[in-house]
Length: 192
Image 1 (cartoon, rainbow, N blue to C red):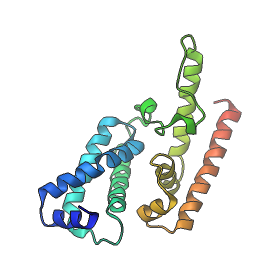
Image 2 (cartoon, rainbow, N blue to C red; image 1 turned 60 degrees about the vertical axis):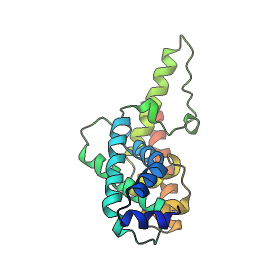
Image 3 (cartoon, one colour; image 1 turned 90 degrees about the vertical axis):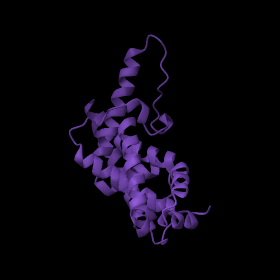
């Protein structure tokens, strides 16, 4: 069933169509939530909330964007709201599991040989510095950077999700990279 037929069936109360939508987008939604909240259980709870919102809001889907873009937008909004509502929670929960999905982006190896606890501690500290630096970015830069680097979305997909022009997304990601470079350079210069 194509996206438009799927959403139309959901709008008409078809539970099988909704189950098919959940099956199709569950991994994408859960991983996106995890990239924002860094806790597996919170990400799973948020993913459920996203699908409840998708079901409740199905009648509002106008087909002006792809269904996946609309679901991404709901996921990002739910994740940001969760972060705002739960500032007291530690950002660094499950840091090892959630780090970008790929350690190679950071140039930090997580493979540790026995007898190298100093290297493990240093790697953990680097990860924490990177996460802190990302969290300190302005909100739109942070969202664009996460969608690009964590979810591996194209700039065009990010533009659709954030409802911005392609050049705005390019600019946000470029500024995010520059800001991260400055923040991380200052950390390493200070020896933090």
